[in-house]
Amino acid sequence: MAYGRCPPQARHRAASGGQFTRRSRPAGQNGAVEGTDLEDTVAGDGLDEYENDEVVLEPAEDLPVDRFLDREISWLRFNRRVLDLAEDEATPLLERANFTAIFASNLDEFFMVRVAGLKRRIVTGLAVPTNIGTPPQEVYAQISALAHELQERHARSFNASLKPALAEAGIHIVQWADLSPADQAQLERVFDAQIFPVLMPLAVDPAHPFPYISGLSLSLSVRVRNPNTDREEFARVKVPTNLPRFIHLPEDGTEQERFIPLEDLIGAHLHELFPGMEILAHHAFRVTRNEDVQVDEDESENLIQALEQQILNRRFGPPIRLEVSEHMDRLTLELLVRELDITEQEVYRLPSPLDLRGLFQFGGLDRPALKYAKHVPTTSVSLLPSEPNADPEIFGAISRGDILLHHPYESFSTSVVAFIEAAAHDPAVLAIKQTLYRTSGDSPIVEALIDAAESGKAVLALVEVKARFDEAANIQWAKKLEKAGVHVVYGIVGLKTHSKLCLVVRQEGGRLRRYSHIGTGNYNP
Image (cartoon, rainbow, N blue to C red):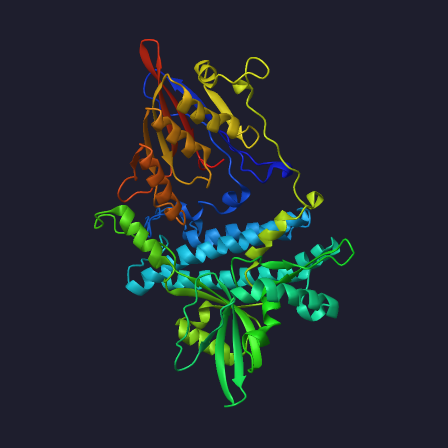
């Protein structure tokens, strides 16, 4: 195995290594490793490495306690290094925006899983001290302090560094108040035609209880006064998630590109949502909920049904973080804290805009000079066809010797995907056995397994339906595979199957030969 660092032009893929092997006896020690997207590299399965809620290890007597690291604090420091990349002026500008969004996305999952799990164990009395004796409440306080520090730095970095740098490059994130009357008139037409119809303001009064606030959704808190009764009321407007996070302003005859945060545009038109009411104040806020799925596999007669029920329940998990605009008034904040039943420690006051995951949107801009150079992987020399325009003989290549692959430098598609597709269509192949942890929405590997089963081959797939936040997708894949005749198993009770394995059994002359692939990452082209 080899593991290395990508050069700048290849950092959007993770460097890794491995081999294909061919054996006339059961194989199992070698394989090939696929690359992953940078977002997977800096987040991906990082939290999945810690599947057990509590792992208590006794420190060696001859080691000082400062030699041990708390896993949660260590993960936050890892995410701090992602923020370092976002702040590094040597990083291409739109890649800085991407890293800024990755940091936010990573931290969301950390709260939904790790912080939520720790809080749940503290509340239920199941939490135990760390291996160096730190009480769980103290760990929670340390996490909170560092998370506050990082989120504040993240927001400052965007507003003081990234946003001005984008403006210098002709990419402006503007506010409603800064626009000319002509620009405002154009956006009013956009609002009336595309945004207003999907907004759903919800008021809070004796006849309307405090509304459910979905996790990770961006909302506007609105305080209004009824001029007829002089009564103040609270309302919530959810910022639609099916619209662009930043609205692209119409061209103004220059080469400058301008965007306005969706919540700012909505905030400028609240009078249309609350006709006849006086708008007193509005502020953005965002709730993070406990979304860690917990299934008692020993008690569940049907794991799939139990998981599906937990997925439905996930959205109703208790709040564990509240992000609010730094200028939110005291009355509104007190209302949110009370209704959401959270503590002051769980409140994060931040400069606008909140939810900087929206910066992923800027990765779609056609500005190649502001991005890493596109990396084009090559096909491994060992897998090249013997003649131009001929199909590669992948089993023959592996038969000549084990093949070591180094992704992303060598193509995943022309090696791993080609291997499984060749096995699916080769009449000499009798069986394919495969693990699936995460895969893409239009996975050629899943389609190849379906083709193999439909052609009469024996196909077995171990689908890990407990892959965090991919449970629903993997359940759908499992059902699709079963309908095609694939034998599907769901892993081992009490364990999560992370291994990436494929075994192909092929008839060659008078004996069976086994070809294997072993990798890290995921079967995700």
